[in-house]
Length: 264
Image 1 (cartoon, rainbow, N blue to C red):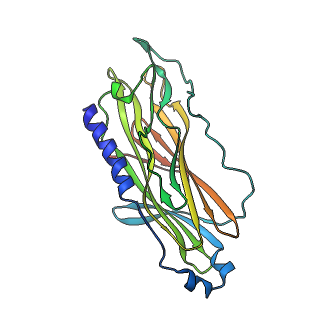
Image 2: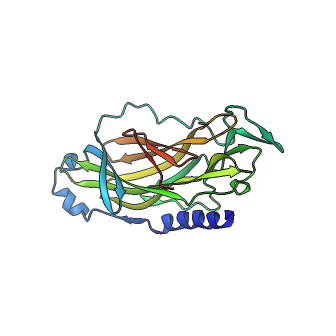
Image 3: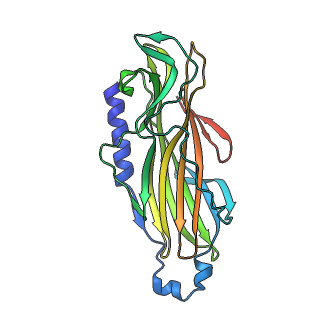
């Protein structure tokens, strides 16, 4: 079962990278020069959709505000550290209630309008302290995948950046029948279209990793964030969105507060 989940997870990541389509909005520099350039390079608003069965379901719309100059906060759980939680029972040196992160806490997704392919990339997992790899746990679910679309719209009502991305995770893993943990939590690119004059970058990071259960029935919970920036010759823009998932399959998009349990 563990090998099957490993193959599914690796395939998901590989397909996510290979399926990226980097294009443009069919607007050439010559065409853009005929427009009001400042208006063309000015973002009016940002839209976020969840794509469900091929249909884009509206999530959020933000009028673009001038950047405050405050950088996007760094990760709460930097690479190489762990966040202790409720001490739980210990079995053979494994502390079931102390949940730690394994894998990459920060990962590049898009750099200068191109997807980043990272060799030997390890998606982040939330597992009991003392575990060296998520494969030591069993009874994992099938990977759960959510697809989102991020759009930047300029003053001409043109979509100057369209970025489709996947949020994927595997849940319900346990150690000797105890606990519910998370593995292979990641954000990867699907489709990217960027208009002339715009530059797009994106990265993912793991934030809070906690025990959302009890010391006797631990349940991993993780918050991850997608950070992105859009640049033109006029200004630098940056935004982020956060997602929350739990070891029982619960998923929450923190943009709108809707909670949706995964189908089991």
